[in-house]
Image (cartoon, rainbow, N blue to C red; front, side, top):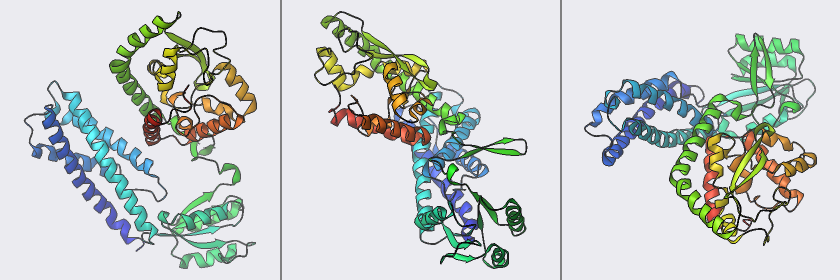
Length: 456
């Protein structure tokens, strides 16, 4: 089954997505009725919302789950659909036009839809991958030009069966292996009989030949893709910028350069840090401040200059855990450090000394998740010792980070530790997703509860 699947899948997806939305709306209605924030609305009133969801989803073509798409792309597509749905619903749906709980209702509806529909769509994506991995809904593909990075692409087709790409072989004048079907000339003779869907062209082919292949593909309704050379096979996705009719490749663009991603991360940071400030810091700061003052003279907060986004210096806040000393910026805390006070030892062991940094998040200097900021002297030292060290300052530093939940937190005792931190920070920056942030936050809680070896 090759193309017939693409005819009925959009209809199957749309119908099942509509039914899933109705089930989700029914659950949201039940939940809000039980909570007492949504009274007097029967379920039939939600039917127009199901139709609205189906309309928005269909117009946005959410059923187009790309062969090489990862699950986070499916969730990003869902997030945009959800924002459109909530916006239209809050404006047009009569039951939400009045009442003291209007915004609570909208948020509850959004959370329920996000969780259940997200689970549903990722499930559909997983089933689709398994279906393709078994040899269904495939695409026939050839590579014109062997060498360089072409064999790596062929290996990807072999390993990732879930992409559903049936690799038929190479066409190349010099290569001679069991996968080579013939020379470049024979490509134009054989291709019309191969039922091709995709042609991959090696970038080093002559430009005149490339234009000829593209013209042939256009006449036969075949998609053409160019294989970048080794210099562009980087650790992340490439994107393109258009200058009129001219295109350039954005080599070092990161996910958080996307305004929507950056906005979503900032909104989450503000909401989460705001809740922590309101419900925890509001009583924790006076309580801890009193204990610090009772034990030793000095300020409640330890304010330290650290490097943030684009190496911009900011004042990082912590509860003071040491007696005032002249070496706080240059000398790391060690095990059984005599400078650490008794209350300071407790704060450090429980990581409560970091809690004021949620105020840094609200001020826009930090994020909940990101590379941990170092002191300025440490930054200057590491910058000269470690390649691409400054790349960790492309985004805001975080209260927690990928390196911290992978075991690289606390005192830096050897070069391997800081190199591993930088490597993990670099991976996080280039592969950021909302799901990755959630995973890091969950693992941070686990580390705080069960792994306290490096906390001193």
